[in-house]
Image (tube, rainbow, N blue to C red; front, side, top):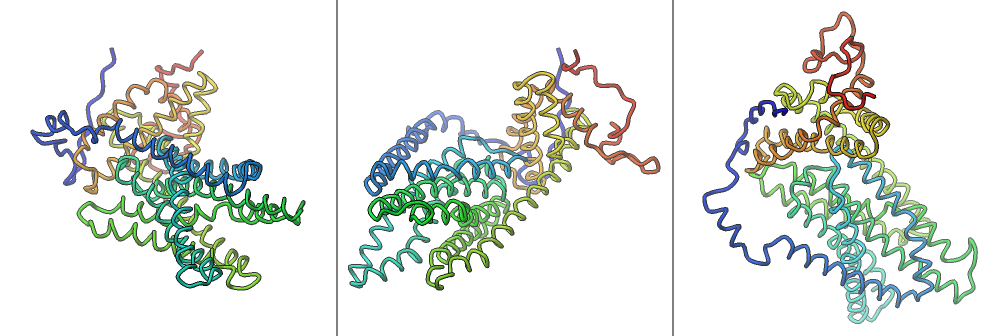
Length: 448
């Protein structure tokens, strides 16, 4: 029976290797109150989201009518798969669990949308009554009340994941993905309402074709600005992501960054909603001058951050390769998105889809391990570092026979050739990327 190779040394840092719990922890867990149990929290949250969904469904259907609701639903769902796929693509270095994304989408589509509809309607009616000026109340509600209420409601989902799923929230990319998926759910429900209402207006006025209100609403909300709500809320997500990277001993910054991101999200949302006040072409001016450049800047930031994450993987995993947990080729292959893809394709082609899924899980666990070690070296891993490291190493060890040959193949295909006059790679040259006479490893299960 194969045995596990030696465990690598723990990185230095105040949190590394700290005991998991004190003497009284086990007893306190056994005697935890009923409301502290995981199934109670999950059940309460699921019930809350289900009730919110039913209420928001009834409100939107009452506002648009059954036919308008169905039309709005059919049109509003179109950008959702594209947006989810885009955020999932950004998260491919260390993919977060689907349950987090499902929660965020459900929160945005149900809870946040319900909060926004109720709070916005109440505030607008109160302002109209207080000022006796309904038109001013609508303008103030759209430019001041709505951004504050909606961005706060969406940011609540990011806060919940940040607090209760801290292990899955490690940096800026996680914040962007969680915030973006939440906002995608919110925009989905809001688009149903707007498109369904527009369809009802066309039924009353006889509008059809390109000149209809429905077509105009579809063009503005679905074609030109499907990323508007995600773009606003991503600013809050970036704030939480920076807070996740901040040291625990600086609590002020961990509060200031999320709050600053939320204020920026509210400000941008208010500018977007108030673009009609800038004249006939105000919408297009704000769109061209602010929305598109900021969208491009945030896209660059996220991609740059993802490249830094890959660099972290390549820098941290050689310690585990030196200890025998990984082969010398794996740190390079796991630090390249192209090599990862080739490894999954190789496993799928030679063994099947199940093997490809195992390779994908291996890549995700190895990335989490690299990030954990990186945080530990900077003193931010937490007291459960040793336990978490052991869990991740165990997951890798169980999948090594399937994943190693695929990653070895990917490293051979993607590694740059080593010049004859150049010394070998500092960490991986012993294995010899590029042209090498070493035969394929004997443990390769893909050989026929």
